[in-house]
Image 1: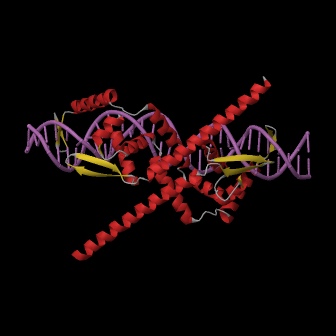
Image 2: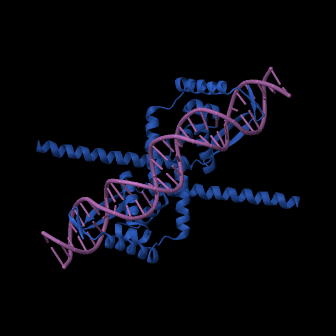
Image 3: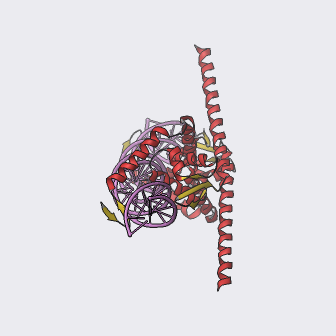
Length: 147
Length: 147
DNA sequence: TTTTTGTATAACCATCAAGTGATGGAGGAT
DNA sequence: ATCCTCCATCACTTGATGGTTATACAAAAA
């Protein structure tokens, strides 16, 4: 028995308790329906494909209409390889499609739900910012009264 | 001059061309408005906070109402540290809030836009799946005619 | 056929994020 | 005061991700 911090800890026993608890949960609980779990994985996968500033900027560009890789590159900057990789991610996730015309590849948005999602996220950001602003404003009033 | 693959490549020159092109783009183009860029980063950050199956499952749980960490843990399985970390991510992103009551922490969803987003993503998944099914079905018809 | 142009891919490195065990710390119970 | 429960955080390992250079490949041009 050793005292650490402000606490009596018989480490192996603490660890054993953790393991037992988690085993119990694993047996008894773990109540996530496998179907639902699979769906969550798919959703997460799609969200990950969206969750990158460069890819969001590309989608924003493509919102105006079909574009060649060269033009996307000209607007975005950065290396050709990098842009191409991002386009590949978006393509594989099904957010964009491409067609070939001569040597050029034309990309376009194939799933406009992206923009709904962005709007929803932006709403959330705005709301959060507003709440933060109010909290600060409130705090200032309180401080102002005190000083 | 060396031949690689099926092509004449004077490597340093190719590389130089790439660099010049990209530098030109960096000077002339790179047309992404800094404000917009900042917004894309914020959106991406939020999306990343959502883009994990465990966190989605937690949010799904919390949709039914406030819950203690212990109960979340019982439903989710896994280690306490891991769940706690995920809760921290959701909290910091502003998707959930928590309050203390004695030794227990109660978590609840504070930004229900999450569920709109999930629905939008699910719609996209369904649509993609449907298109894929149709493509396969079509291909089978074509093959069936041929055989 | 050879070369050039436009695009995708491979190999690699640095950074990040998820999971784990151990520990810290708040607060109630004894 | 002591101990236990509930929860957060740290240190660490490992797998994923973004970026880079170099190269492959397809289609038009020469």
